[in-house]
Length: 209
Image (cartoon, rainbow, N blue to C red; front, side):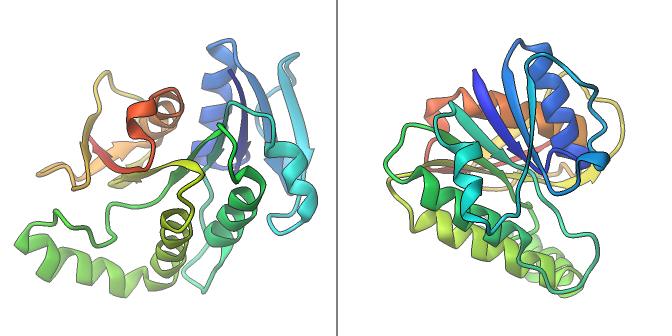
């Protein structure tokens, strides 16, 4: 596999890069500041410096088997980081066979939400994280409006820094019931697995442990 990881210097993206290299894949790590990339030099690792809105980003994502987007805001302020990155990648991938897998959040509203989640949990989360969630909703809308891009939306529940566990629970089109957290390492692994799973093309899948 030949993949590109956007957000490679982040806590999920960095693990995804390491895991992909361990699987024998070739990785292009897209960063804004190479000094923040914690992954050691590797013969199958290329580092590309790009802005998310720079047209040159297309050079780092075209011709790949998969592109992973694992971006996140640094604070609670208004942001467009995920929607900007997604829009640029979608523009570059129109009509290609490249898989595009993005990290969203299970706190966003979904068709399969329980009454408790719909009326209490998600409104509370939405109030606290409204700026980040607004950006994620824009990101998901961009993907739903791109039927000729082979995308998958991954919605993890609350992220932790615990070691990866053996099993991950997943549900397509609805939240994983009564499961409220997942290690970032497991999210990174799931992104790579999803990139090889054509059954998840055009699907939103929630994951938890």
